[in-house]
Image 1 (tube, rainbow, N blue to C red):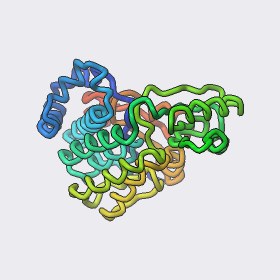
Image 2: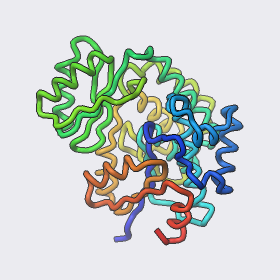
Image 3: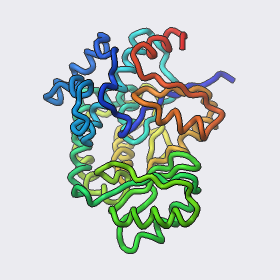
Length: 311
């Protein structure tokens, strides 16, 4: 059986000041960021390279920054006549990167869309009232039970099923603190509060999802040229309305990443490449799915080498 490949794209939290490194001047990368900057109205590459970090980490800045970075790397790969993969998938925001690279959403529209998405998310929950925490070493189904036990009328739920032993919870800040304590008492090895201002993928994001639905009405969604496995359903959607519906639901539904990785492995995927800064998805797969070998592609040089079979 022929080996299948998937290209993966990271989500928010992978951004760092200086993440473009020396390849910021690569012609394809520079062109990509010039396009993004023209849409946003500020020099995105300069902000990424020089900070300040507080600005880059704002939800509505980090999202276009990560999208542009992942797309720039993929474009550098394609410019060298690299073969398209069998599948693409992205974690949360990374799903937008996958859809842009699969030509389902035009890049300029994608940049504007994720900036809007970030603003909708930030506006949905007042600063300091939401929280997220990573629960490590406790089965996902137990985390779900702990959240239900701790809710006490407030919102807290499991929102990122990242691996069999890592689940992220989100909701109202005090409810997240209570649920974290219940998870710890239930046997979690570690509970790590996350430094985020927006509790993504929980019911608190429903107002943002309604606004996103309207914004998506202005986007030219096309048939993906590569199959994209989505977060909300662990499924491949090709009709524009179905793609839009999945993106809207993704905002207030759990990211089913662990299921996605298993689905890919079951379908014969043995090679994965993470296009973007950092190595979050690489780490998750290395620990959870031995059937898939994964490598990072976080510089233009790495993208060129991969395209030329010189990984």
